[in-house]
Length: 549
Image (cartoon, rainbow, N blue to C red; front, side, top):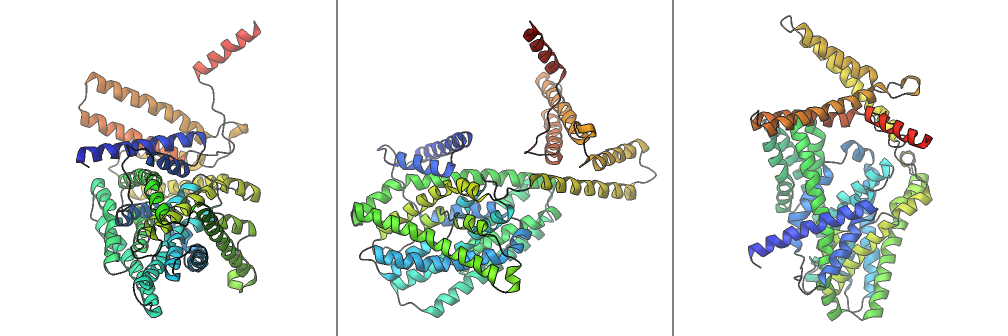
């Protein structure tokens, strides 16, 4: 395929991804499932070239940035607070799933060795960070559940890949249990060490950077740097990327400028959107080639259906057994565990969120050519990915039946306003220390009055049930900002100022508008009514007059 054709297909790929995702978002459908279905349908069109998944491209090119984008949005404090639950799922559940699915596959699939069956169990064992985030992001899950599910999906890939390597070693050579244990320790220790090392080194480098474009450029290569270095020493590249991302996100407010942080958030949000949705489309596009290989080596239609149902049931049931058993341990175990227990309703929600994605499909293509029934196992991996995505569609109904509490947005809003008030007080205190006799009194008084207004009105109850003062300030200030932007654009149209000055002023206006969106009260459950403008009142009076006639 020539470069022009390749670029054209890439452009079409992005357009389809954006269109399908935008459309499904408007009508409330699941974008991952829709993209897989669209990709699968397109894969059977003769004009569409056959898509073959290259596992190295996925593991080294796509997975690191996706993991990093998820890691920098993950709270270090939340992960540390739920580390016992996350480790029990990312290590214990993965190992349990490998054995359960491995034995089931060995019994169901004809002419397959036990080592190959365990290799397949390792392929389908880990939940996928991309898929879990895509589904969990649409639901109002309790914060604790979101932390556990995302933490599990970020860390369990390392366990699964070590198990996969052990099973592959058993396929091509003699299995050595001590070597397996050593590989696991090396993967974990090496990955964690590289992650912290890269995070600390880049943290120190960021202290020296002043331009946000340099900071952003460094951020874009961070996941690849951590992944490649960890893989080079036989550590877990997945762990290295996750640790580096969480470390840098936690320390970034102390070294990054506000501009650099805004740029990093926007850039990684865009990268994550394109990659995570394109991945599901790519999975669907690969279906034609996967089915072709499965038909040649598979046991036939009806046996294949029975095998698919059996493996999916084993996967779902094994997760329920482990999570519910863990719940019993939390409730009946030592006092330390009883203090961190979760409810049965939370356990059912966690059990129902075992979604697989790109890691499973990429790992299936890591199986060596000498693996018995290799093409058929790759087809089964696709079935597992699509089947668990469909399981994710049932999550909203399951959560409604469980009646899990939604996040307390009112409480979070109150905490945000209280923290902002503390910040304003700290700013006032630093202002008093920084003022000198040479500073103009008018400037100092303006800074004091603005800070005092913000501090006093944040979280203040509205007078006589009316609009809160802070909300009124935000509404009126936004009106002023819109007029300011219109005036600047009009001046640009007239050519009265240089473009550099216009862009600088627009950037300042955008920054203030962004700050207003951040600090404004955001009660989604009980939104405050907006007061009528002069034109709105006139329109209402005309309508009332017509009704009176």
